[in-house]
Image (cartoon, rainbow, N blue to C red):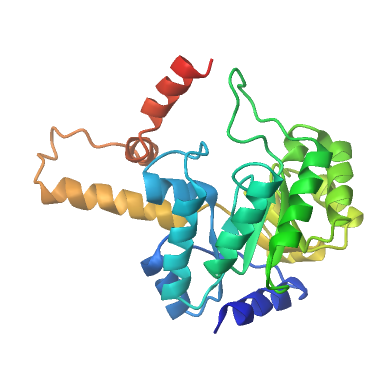
Length: 284
């Protein structure tokens, strides 16, 4: 399939009445495996891209060029309709236009632009959101920049965690009016919140990392959710397998070796402690 055909395939799903969990992919091999077992929609998350490309935690260190190159490798190796987390668009509205251009050239089927203030600014310890007006400007810029009308532009927000239902609905209504194709929400934790979101918009909904009570695909589908993301198990399993195989290969004495827990392995692999120290030293 060419790029437009992949985008059309994703659009057909978004117009359906089903909710699916896309394959969490991160490189040509993972994407090719997903395609080989019959999956046709994949997702490259920002945290996953940062881990694979930089070996770093999800703190907006990756660049647009690095992301676009990884996307290109994935789309070249598989037939997946690839959804890409484009974070904040790597800057202001004009940077968003560049982001759309580069990711379209890399043959994405869809991309998300979020309203979180990224990267975190000096002295900030919690997430904050840009203004609605700035977010609207970014989404309009994304729509103006795309060349293929089949490319899916998704507005993403974590407002439920900071502004509650009222603030979230205000943002969703404003974003929907821009003409975007779908909405991506994180921090939704209750059925009441999801029902309020569903009532407020006719757009397809993407739901990220919802709790167990919001993981039934039938329930989600009935509330307008077409894509549900439940973590990125393939990457987690890969890191664990790499640690175990390298540990074995160098024949470390299992009785005395420092065998780490899964969470500790992930922290070591992404050098998380180093970045935490640097943040405290330079950004407080």
